[in-house]
Amino acid sequence: MISFAGGLPAPELFDVAGMRTAYDRVLAENPRQALQYSTTEGDPELRAAVADRLTARGLPTGADDLLVTTGSQQALTLLATALLEPGAVVLVEDPCYLAALQTFAFAGARVVPVPTDDQGLVPEALEEIAARENPTLLYVVPTFQNPTGRTLPAERRTAVAEAAARHGFWIVEDDPYGELRYEGEPVPWIAAAPAAADRTVLLGSFSKVMAPGLRLGHLRAPAGLRRSCVIAKQAADLHTSTIDQAAAARYLRDSDLDAHVAVIRAAYRERRDALLEGLPAVLPEGSRWNRPEGGMFVWATLPEGHDATALLRTAVGHEVAYVPGAPFFCGEPDPAAMRLSFTTHSPDEIGEGLRRLAKSFV
Image 1 (cartoon, helix red, strand yellow):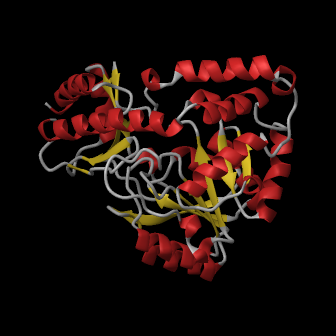
Image 2 (tube, one colour):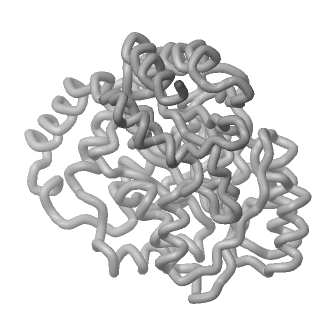
């Protein structure tokens, strides 16, 4: 099976040696602290290192602005606990990251979709819906979005920040893919916009640049909301793994994560290009797809009359898989949409996967 389905980092690119060394040093030099309970807010050295990285990327941040979480997925759960009452309105991009939809549904929120186009969330639609629905928060992945790979332009980010200020809702800005840029120029975070400074939560993760098995994420939020998330985390798991935090902090001290990310970017860029170059000969005439500037996903739409969910069974019969796009929609689903992840396989494997996929349309 060659799978374009899961959004998994390439395991052969993990810096196993560097991580092993970091764990060894932590256990050799400070084992009693590394194996003990810790503070809910997170390892001070790790928080300082994350703050420095965010500051270097254009968002001035101090260690005390951050809460370490067990993956950024936990951060979503903590925010839902802190902010949402049953029936509260949450606005989301349509289509949206599936696990976020699940989190908000478990919290009893009423999830309302905001239309998107090829550039992401449509500000005019957001303005109209926010005025009508009185939302508590907007959840958005503005950079290399999951599932579409789209990046929200700077002017739309400003419009989102200004809409939040006018209508009084929180913005949850999820950024797991931002460092995986293969072309183009970085776009400032929504959290960096003055209008959004007091109402934006920025989520980040080491899953895509270090290793997902660490389950290390972080949440940057205004003080009052951050304190509420700390209380919610104490009820959830007391704190994120002490030794994993210590090892990550040691890795950031002793190793060059930026150099490692550059290796990842180079490999993923080659894999993205292999997928894009092969699609014209594979998908039916009239299909459309985007060219993401980074991230892990290409979003494709088959011609009218095709059903990507129904076709998946045929594709699996040819030992290739993808994710149908319909489950990502909160509003009216597009049955012809499909998500293709390019990160897990080499260019040669991608080529073979595409040849198998082509048989599904014969």
